[in-house]
Length: 613
Picture 1 (cartoon, rainbow, N blue to C red):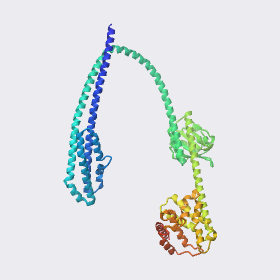
Picture 2: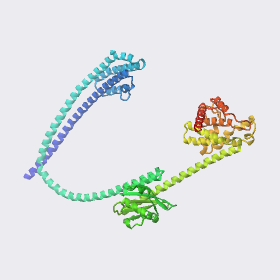
Picture 3: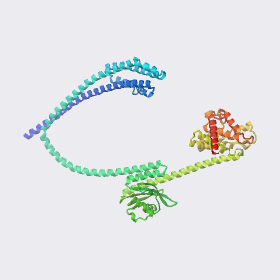
Picture 4: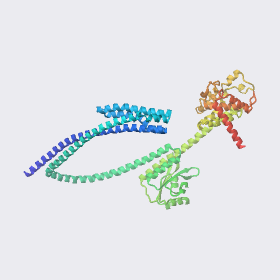
């Protein structure tokens, strides 16, 4: 019966404790909501006061900066004034924020209505003084500043803002007091509720004690389960470690892939390979040999972790040492006893200098061809497992790809260079053929090409543009291939009909060159070198800067060389007459800037000739 009564009392006490907790929780929730609301109102009031301080600070800083500018004339003092006018964080935005924050307070809204025109008036005053300082100088601006207008406005602004701050200070005190009272009441209720709850819970001790004993038995059983779980977690940690290791290895392979794709120099890609080998395999030294199929030598092109600088220049024969054996047998070789490995004296000296005890080497084979060897060394005994060897050989495969990619790129560069050389040789051959056709102009093409390139460099053209200028100059008369010999080689002056045909040679040049994509950028000179600055040239009557720059410069050089040279129908002009002709036709036939550059070039060459003599 007693046990039953105690159990019932325990249940009643536990129930009362729960009910009391619920009641206290409800009261605490309501109290904390009141406290939170009061705190929010306090924060709102503080925000209003901060905005008021910000508004006053902006105006004071702007006024101070205005006076600094009037005194010094240095526009850096106008930075605060410019901030006041800023649409993002200036005075207008601050006043808008204040209006929004005090939208529920009619008294503050009225104060803002008073403040806005005062601020506008003060800004207008500052603007007038700044403008007067810029236009009329310091004394006029200083007189305006010393008037009472600006000071009275600023005092009014201070009074309005101070009144608003006083209003907010009163609100802040009221709201803070309310918040404190709400918090104090909540704390008392929670404290009393907690005490009563503990008291009622104590009454249920006997019932809970029995339950505790049952739980202890359960905990013992759980402890056994936890031991099994810990073992499982250890297994999972081990698996996780292996997964992380595989992910790191995948990252290494990916890094090497990126190096292969992004590097044009095989040494840069191999540097990445060596870095990953060093980081992932725990080696002391790693080096990459490249194989020379002509000399049958393996030469170090990359090394990391070396102690001796001579290691960087090491070269061995096939079959020499671990690396030479790996290359010769085309398989991975592991040397745990270096004393038993056959090697040359120079290689033995390197091994001794590096204090190596274990060496592992594997061949680099790309597309079935030996391209080198990846070799690593340890300064202590090391026996690699199969997992280590698999990753080592995977890195070697990436290194072989890097070597093959670098060799392919080098071959491509050589092919591209040979192709460009062939193109230029062909162009020079065409140019020479044109000179051979017209003996009277032999040598003209090379002379004007050289002179035009000098002018183009003076004009600031890039190296790529100079290449096209050179090709265009060499081919400037390629269109004359379409002109009959009876006209081209005529020893007398041409008739109007013959001139019409002769003037077709730029059009013929365009028709010959434009289908050739490689020569299309060089078309400016062959197609446009007979256009004139005033628009009277041919074939299209281009005018001024409509004419390509290269053609404008070439036109000056072409006429200069042509007039100095003998022709079947006339003798070459004296140098002075030629230069006078070019000056006279500047602005009509020739681009004035091109003429100025031409004469500047002639002056420089004369000075160089005089200095050399």
